[in-house]
Length: 131
Image 1 (cartoon, rainbow, N blue to C red):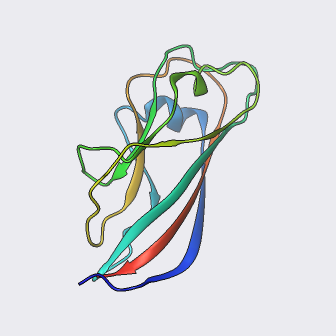
Image 2 (cartoon, rainbow, N blue to C red; image 1 turned 60 degrees about the horizontal axis):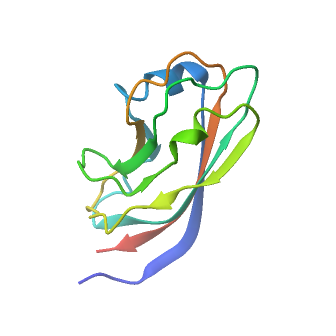
């Protein structure tokens, strides 16, 4: 049976331009696997694109999933990557997404972003669940 959730936790991860451009082929872990007999309960995902001088030209979404899953749990609007100024976004939940014990939470993009020079920071709120 699933136990009670522990305290609320937060994680912050900033991706460099190079990491953003490679996300379609190389997902990045945002929250590490929590360990044996634990699962992550994602409560919210926020993003901040720190516009420098160029957004990303291709209309792609940021997708968030539990490591290796084919179904994603959250995603962005395509306009997030194409911003021409600083952009803040609350990502939309796409659910229900299955969760798994001792599984990391990661981000990837739906396609190649193209050239751009704006780093992106993700803010995640979550709980650890005893299972």
